Image (cartoon, rainbow, N blue to C red):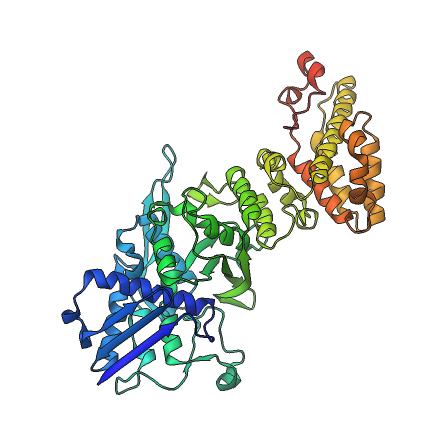
Amino acid sequence: MSTQLTLNLNNPHFTLLHRAGLAGLWMSLKQLDAETNVRDRPGYITWELTQRQVSLQWEGEDFQVLNWLLNESFQLDDGRISLRGLDSKTMDIQSQLILHQGILGTFLQHNKTHTSTGLVSKSFILEEGKPELVARYKHLSGYIYQQAKILCDKQGKFLTKPIKVPGWLNPGTVVRHIAFSSNTSFEETPESVFVLLFAAVACCYYSIRSKLRDKRAEYALVIPEITDLAAYANWRRHRKWREEGYKDFFASGLGDAGLKFLTYITKDILAERPFKRCQVITLGTVPWASQQKTRTDLYLVEANERIERNYQVCDNYLSTRDVAGKEGLFISCSFARELIAENLARGKHWYAGLADNATSNELFQKLTYERGGLNQMVQEVEWDRESEKLFVKACHEAIGYNHKQLYKRAKDRKEVPNYEREDTKFRTGLARCKTAVAFREFITDYLSRAQFMPTLEENWEGFMDLIMGAKDWKKGRDLALLALASYKRSSQSQKVGTEESAEDEDEIDFGY
């Protein structure tokens, strides 16, 4: 008996994850084409691959053929998940580990989806002269993608009735109420379930280090919007994906993961991206279900040229770092990068919500750790309006003048100037501004103390909406806090208590 299966991107019931699954199947079959002969395949299974369609045909028992296909597509290499469609056995060990950990942290997080022989460690050097990074991962002896049981009945025939979709096929798709599981579970056709089995091949995975969401976002699953199977396969199998290291697959949040994926190859290589958007799902631990990773956010990320340029500036100056700690090397992601990338991914001003998110002294300190990077962002990013950049510069001038006065008073008393206390007063004053009137009174009072402000004098009309407007006052508050976080004193002004510093205290390094 002959069985034929035709799967097309035009299927109106296919979601982005289904399309990714079809691309994963396409990639797996393409690799099997090069590595197997038809006469050696069960049921003499053959296939035809086009830009938008996959057609399969075989003879004999469905279970035997499908089980072979899954076993060949989903393998293990030294206890790590190995995907035929990505030829992942030939990848660098760091890329293999991220793939393995990413799939276990998203699709196959439940212990019932895999069998493990325990935890093992793998160490490698990320950067010359630094300690080794030790990565711990589950050593597997098998996982559920290697079995065709879900697709066939007891007689080994391909099912014809709908199948309940478990979370390991579609993360976040769960039974809403266990007492009414038959009415609240999610069902798919057998053909759709077959496609979803291969979604893990085409998706990408990032380990999240979020300062805002903490454990609510531990992994990001990135699902591309695929319109051309062949083009996506060529892009996803590009050598650059195979050459990058462990650190490259860490992100600060949902927006960072989405934009990193969208710009990953195009930022360095003249390679056209075969898709415009991607869906990002974050999974993490929530108080009511601490035993497993729950879907905590979902967003469709799209990037135009301007967003990509601004994200590139962010990537250049607010990069992910490997840091030596007491227990060895660990990966640290930038808090400022998280805020900025989230805004860019959601189509907001890159500095939006700064005052609402950096609400505590601890979080503000995290911003100031990256003062230099933020200062470069202010200079190089493409602003919506030039007046916004100039307003930051005007605030820099006011902060610099007030610091100068503080220095002079401290010098007269033979004390060390406490710039940090002055900046804390400015930050807490901004935090108390909950209305347009309160912000206007606070910022005009602060700016009026500075007697020399050429930028304000030359551009005051352009600042009216930011200072006086009922609509844009929150934008003005965010820009004022950005100015404080990105303000850089000159190197000479750090040398307090010397004649040299007294001469140069008014030399402020604005970087403009």
